[in-house]
Length: 432
Image (cartoon, rainbow, N blue to C red; front, side, top):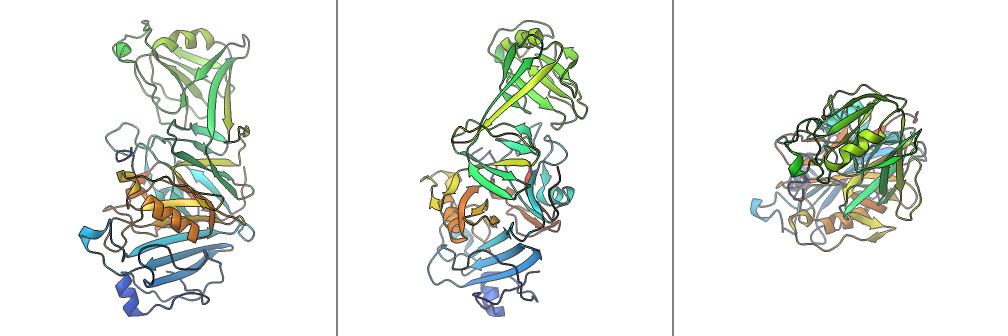
């Protein structure tokens, strides 16, 4: 779901509803010639969607040791086009990827693709990461009308590198991954950034990472080198952002891989080499940046969890951002809401069961063959799948699952949408 609105398979033999050609036609799916799977899928039992007693089918396939893909189709259909948002008959199509770290040989991680400026289809992100499977993840700028459509909105942590900071949105919730242990946790993280001069010990606060800094209106036409005292900000950029940093009035200081200043400019916009970073300042932050950014600097990132514990940034750490926590230790915690965001849409969700299994799932929507889920329905589905902690990731037209580099679900648009990042499962041990 973009920010403009808020901003093949094999049946297991045990506990699965038998599918006939007739029932499959009612559900809006095609029965494939499939064989049993030894991989454990999600907890079995009817999904809590629509009326009780609706027909439901499940088909599972072991796609790697300790990894299964399950497709669940529930309800009767196709739905009348005018009743997608309110029908109690369905149908619903849910694809569930279950990863059991006790038996899987691979690891979960997140990837933003080649850079943060571009958005790419989830299938391309899965292929590019050399992954077996994946789903779309964080909210992002989305629209092609902006200059940086792939720019993440919220925490983005990739291999211990903070490429996007948490937003001020109180609904923002994060999925944190330790790729070396395949443990995931859900919660809200806080970040504070600064830069310190190693010789003078003078420090400056950094407002954000890898997003264009706000240019105060009085400073918009300020020529290079001129002074503007309206309130501005300092933003840090890495070479991951784009081929060039955002141009405009202000100042920019480029640091080499060792943190030492390699060039200074009284205007913004430059190319960064791998390993280089830059600091951009606007408004009243220009003079302090130019005064402080001499010699060698040290970036300081402080990331803390909800309990206030500082989280060390290690190469095995990854994190993506969602909107609203669905489950907190088995309890449904989504708030009541009547806005568009809370209604029925395609949904992407992720989390962990109490015994540590990882579940990534998509619920197709805005189709007569799958009507989607409200935020409350999504939380109920997460609980029924056995999740203990879960987060609602970006949904709507972004909802996508890819397995073996091909599209698994049915996105709501006419084609697969390009997104900012993805959660992917790589079928090999994690190596930093």
